[in-house]
Length: 345
Image (cartoon, rainbow, N blue to C red; front, side, top):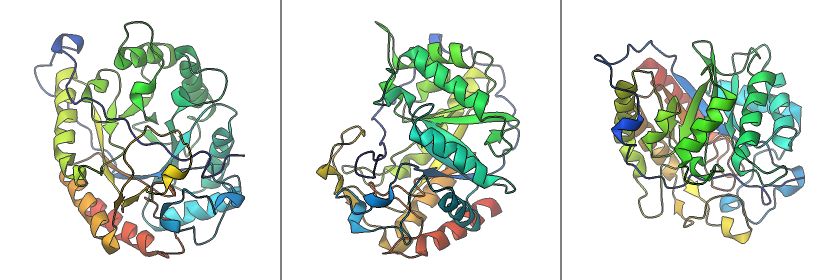
């Protein structure tokens, strides 16, 4: 079974910031679309591929470990995590998901089972298009996997929905299989035409390229700090403005999720191969919560529809807030404070 060392999480690709030519999007309406109020969601990035015997892997951030080591296949532990997250003001998890029948799929079903009787919500960050298993991730296979998620899980009472529409998050947008001459955006448009032709779901894309909003219904940014630009999170208002511009151009509501994070340290990740897009490893100190606060202030200033926390338990990139040996419950407590402030605005 995969371990934290064998199957770590994903980082985003660097996408261009220019939009598609105006002719490729819907004509701008006379007036911007009316925006119905959206509940201020706080969602947390969640990983379900850790093994009990993997917590001594060489690539775990800063040598820290969970306060209680666990196996991601343990439904009881998932229940503990759901209760901890709820107590910290988190509304739901976005589980990194690979494919039907794969380990993360089985754990998605277990996680949903642990939410019953609570207000906690679950969705996925869809990664079928980069899954290294078989069959190959053709556009048809990607579309089939999206239909599988919607048919199997979207009717669950605890599946994340906005205005009655089930929500899916996506990542690594440009790694989709493409036909000759296709752009990634065109490839995703072809997938959506097969998987969700009536747009009954809300699709949220990852990255810095708002042109994906020609196909998708929202945008978020995975990695808000970089080795060469550690304060990239200060651009949140600029990223949000691009989303709102596409909302006006298309005449359709487009969601913006601002990203918050307590820190970054993937300097130990180089000890083993992983699925992430290569980037320079680096460390950005948490400064006892000061960085977490700074990313929160920048995200909230962008007037987001929701916040996305990176992460609940990313132990390779060092963004976790779940209780740890080094930090105890410090970052759960900070999350509770920030969640309260977000909802009070």
